[in-house]
Amino acid sequence: MSQANLNGGSLNEGGPSVHASAVKVGTVAVLIRGPSGAGKSRLAFDLIMAGRAGVVERSVLVGDDRVHLATVGHEIEVRPAPKLAGLIEIRGLGIRRCDFVERATVGLVVDLDAADAERLPAAESLKTSIFGVEIPRIPVERGYSPLPSVVAALTTTKSSSSVNP
Image 1 (cartoon, rainbow, N blue to C red):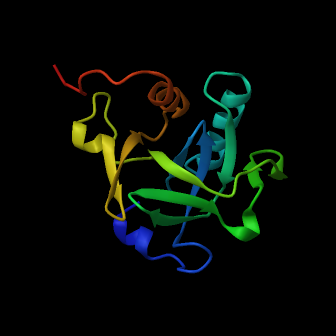
Image 2 (cartoon, rainbow, N blue to C red):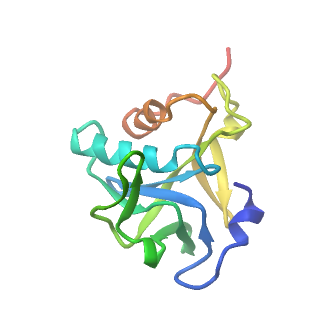
């Protein structure tokens, strides 16, 4: 999603509204962006289940399908869209209610169906800027499961840098 798309949302209800999902994992939120049908809700639910299984820290839904973003100091805060708070789409079951948090600080962005996704990504593709705040990013190619990369980003230490030998 481009910066222009982020600025094009509604300015009420706590900041611009964007088509994305978010899950708070431990102390930071994973913001999941991508086109309709890319698997945003699926990854959100997978992260919640990974938290329940102890694969990642405790994970709680922030919002599914539509969230609001705002700059708070030098961070980006994400909140659920009020009418969708506590609701998540589960393919094959429909819309379900689940626990959620009212806000979280974005610490990782996952872009599904990303045009710049590569096996060994360039360092510049592993970060994005939202409202001037730089945030780590994972670009995921269509057809690949994003969960392993997200779990790795959340549970492993960063090497000296992403270097293509």
